[in-house]
Image 1 (cartoon, rainbow, N blue to C red):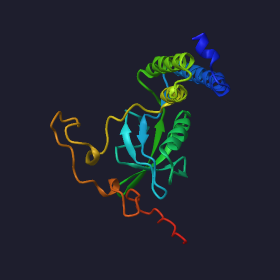
Image 2: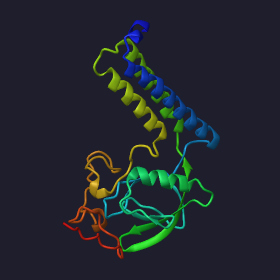
Image 3: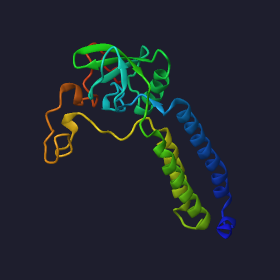
Length: 230
C-alpha cells in the first residue's frame, strides 16, 4: 500500500486530502444530529421535481406527521410557508420543507387535490433505522480508498474513489428511503399490495397525467404559463 501511495499523482493526493476529511466531517455531523434527536428528523414525504410551470407531486409517503389535513400520493404541493413551489426540484423542496418542518410550528403547506385546495402543517419525524447508512457508507469509502492507494495506476481507481465518497455522503443525508408506494396508474402489474400477479394499472386521473405542455395537470386558479417570445 505504501509503495502504491508513493506513486500517487499530485491531483490524487489533493483529492484524498480534501475529500476524506469532508466525508468524515459530514458523517460526524449527521451522526451527532441523529444521536441528539433520536433519529434523523425528516419530513418522510417524497415528491417529484416540478416542471417549469407545475408543482411538485407527492410520489411516496412514509407515515409523515401532518396536522390540519392529510396527504395522498398524487397530491400537488403548491406552497410552502406562503411561498410558491412553481418549478421547484425535489431536492430543493426536500431541503426547504425539512428545515421548516423542524421548527416547533412546523411547515405550512398548501395542497392541491383535484379541484380542492387546502392547507396543512407538516412536522419532521424520525426515520426508522436511521443509522444503517453509516456503516455502509464507511465500508464503501474505505474499500475505495484502499483500492485507490494500492492501484493508483488503474484508470477507474480515481473515479471509483470519488463516486464512492459522494454516494456515501448522499446516503447519510438522503431525506427519504426508497419509494414504497406510487400512483396506481404508474404501478406495474404484479408489484402492488395485492400480491404476485395482481394488476394495479388504471387510467391516470387528470391531475396525474402530463398535459400537452409537459406539466402535470394544473390546479384550478393557477396562472397559465407566460407566453414565449421568439
